[in-house]
Image 1 (tube, rainbow, N blue to C red):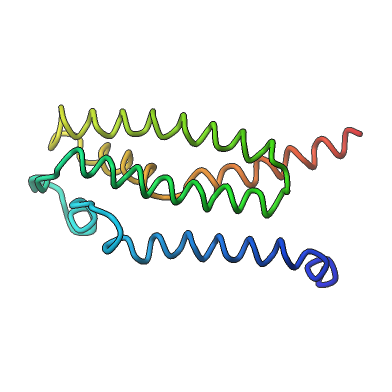
Image 2 (cartoon, rainbow, N blue to C red):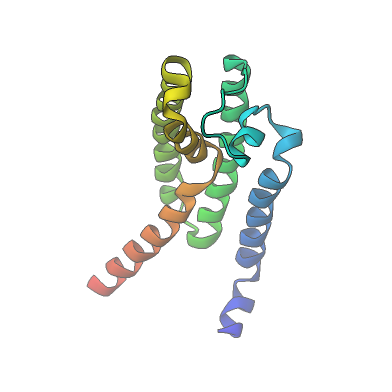
Length: 151
């Protein structure tokens, strides 16, 4: 196994760099992004009013954060599989997912506000955290092994 890792040291290094970059997005979230809900959702938020948020600035900030997470996640997928078709397919899925998730988040934020705090919490979480890479990597790995076993 160690021998295999040494053969693919550039891929392992790329993977590690992209994981560190994803962690950096999370570590520096307070400095990089406008998000008045970061502190709100870290505390006990039941029964409290949502903080005022500039919806346009929040949307642009979430787009920026999602774009960074997507870029680094696509880097992880490329480092692991070295397949541009998978990267393109993943990028399309990331784009579709962003449009759907932002529509849901903004709908909850603008029209329901304080009635659906947990729905807003989870919709926001799906946008700002790189959850899709946790689904794609095992799925692509399983698919690649299933195709190899069939041949």
